[in-house]
Image (cartoon, rainbow, N blue to C red; front, side):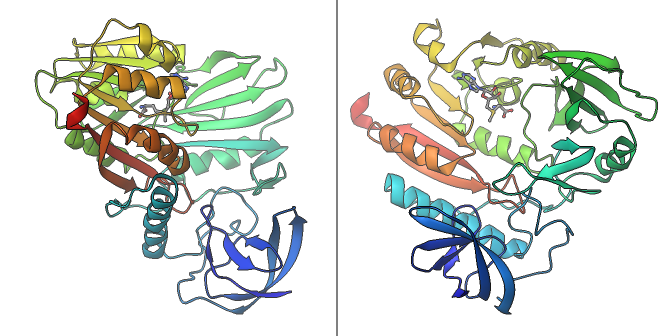
Length: 401
Ligand SMILES: C[S@@+](CC[C@H](N)C(=O)[O-])C[C@H]1O[C@@H](n2cnc3c(N)ncnc32)[C@H](O)[C@@H]1O
C-alpha cells in the first residue's frame, strides 16, 4: 500500500492517515512509501516500509547499521537539528494539549549526539543484543553508537564468553571506571580473566562482586558520586551538568533555603545544590541508592544534607519544612497523594524534572491551580531517541500564601 507520511508521533514514528491511523517507523513527514501492515488494532495499524518512493530532505543516512531493526534508537534517520526541533515541538504539543500550557522555552541541545550514554543493558541470546521495537526479539549488535568506544570494546570480549544462564549484561561507565553486571538465572561461575574492570554477578536479587569493586565513582561539576549496581544515575555524561545547572539556576537558591530533593537517587542534585543553601533532605525508595547518597555526602564534605530511604509518600510524616522542593520522579510521574502533600507543604518554589512529558503535563494540570508555571525547558538527554527530559519551574501563586 502506498502512503504519504503526514507527521511524526510522540515516539518518532511516521503517521499516515489510512482507513485508520498507521504508525510507521523510519518514515519522515512528506515521504511517500510503500508499506506492509504488520499489526492491526481496533484504532490503529502498525506498518513497515517496504520501499521509499519520495525521500524527505530532512533524512540522513543512519550511522548505525542496526538502525532499521534495533529498538534502541528511533531518530537516527533525522538530522540532529531537525531532531531537536521535533522534540521542542513535541513538548509544546503535549503541554498545550494536556495541560493548556504554552510558554515552552527553546530546547537545550546536547553537544554530542553519539557516544553519550554511560549505561547500557544488553539482552542475551548466546550473544549480546538489544530488543527490536515493541518486541522481545533480540537484535545482536557488535557496536552501539550511543555508548563509548571503551564500552563497545567489551561487546566482542563478552561475546566470546559462555553466556548460558546469563540473560542480561549491564555496562556502567564513569569518568575513569567501568562496571559490568551479569544478570544470571543460575548461580554460575563467570570467567572474568579477560575483563579489565569491576565485575558483579546478580542472581536472585543479590549482587556479588567477583572482580574489583561493586561500585564506580563518577563526577558532575566539582562533585563526586558513588554509584552501586542498582542505583539510578543520569545516563548522559555530556548533558547532566547542564541539567543540574538548570535546576540550580531555576531554584533561585539562597543561604536560608531548606530544600526537599524528592526521588533523590544517589543524592546527586541535593548534594549539587547543598553548599548554596541552609539544609537539604533527600528521599529515595532504593535503599542501595540511599547508602550511596550517604557515602556521597561524606565524599563531598557536605554536612547540611540528610536522606530518608522510603517511598515519596512519606513526605506527609517528615519533620522537615522545606520552602523549595525538587522532584525528579520516574516516568510514572507523581502520585496523587504526593501532589496533595506538596500542595499542603505549600513551598514557594517547585522544580519538576521529568523524563516523561505526558505524566508531567498530567501533574502540572493539578499543580497549576496553586502554582504559576514559570518555565518549561526541554533538555535533550537522549539524542537519537524520541525521549526528552523537561525541567519545569513553578512558583506559588500569591493568593495561596
Ligand atoms: C529519574 S530518577 C532521579 C534520581 C536523581 N534525582 C538523579 O538525578 O540522579 C528517579 C528516582 O526515583 C526513585 N523512585 C522511584 N519510585 C519512587 C518512590 N515511589 N518513592 C521514592 N523514590 C522513588 C528511583 O529509584 C530513582 O532513583
